[in-house]
Image (cartoon, rainbow, N blue to C red; front, side):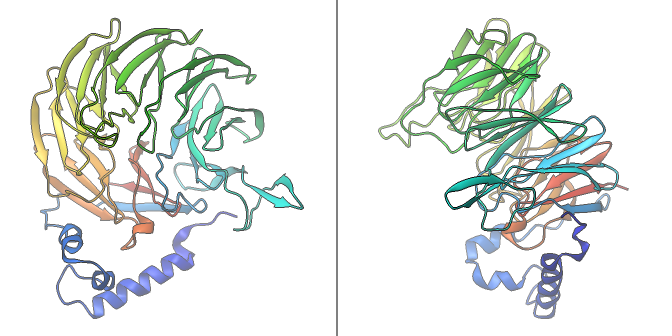
Length: 418
């Protein structure tokens, strides 16, 4: 059952906690939970004052399930066909009206065990087995779901009915992609799969290399112009032909170095960005690169480390590094335009361009608006509350002029700027 969160017990408890915090505040930045934090964390949590240019407001909120809990996840909502699609890790997939958050349909992929048998259920008690959804993608009038259990499913985007399903040997930790009637699924085992979007028939499989030690995550593929672009845990960027899965080219973005396997991690865990015939990608250990789509030739490289997705708007590329510093670069040559470090160590999401700003979420449930031209923080809004379970763990999306964010405990919020 889905309902607006204004009546949720968690929201009520949070309100009481915040009221209590106000009553015992020792400074303008302290809360009850500050008592349990060390000085270093307190310094990170204390937001520096800003001169707000506007006051964003939550238009609606919707609880869609249990969220992703404390697990690493890139599971984010998708807007398509005049609907907002979202999922929680446990198994709920929901289609909502973007104007109100009202549920159009819901599907539950979670299961429970009875006498050694597995049974699907539409409403699941907490004792059930998590579906472990890793990503959703919408295309070809279908909602495609991939899970860490190696399960892939296609739902009718209008009704939510199951159209087909399949299994793959490996975890699906990122959203699939589709083009030309072919669904592409990347797995943590290093294999890339192509399925017919209508029937679920497996068309091809491409095997890749996987180092002994990798990050908990994989690159999301993008499908365009007859090819599939994906980053690899070996530090390479590759393009496969979407019809056959045959490797067209691969190029080294980052090279392993160091004495230990930990030091030699070079994963490209972000979804590449294709813009004007150029692919942009970034690796965990410190390489941001622009690569020519047709040949794989590296146009430029810069030293930035990130596992967050890149975003481009016009001639600016926005990077959030491993320490939560935010940068704007000229996408044509990689020249840094500005940096924003006042949100450092707040576990920021990727930066989403919207109008004259980019928006990032953080570990404590805040959204921050950063001016594209200057890099200054010009507005913020507390969406989640003062609990890390309410953190915004993945970049918000833009839906009909509104910002839609999802919190770690499964609350989807639509935010508008006056």
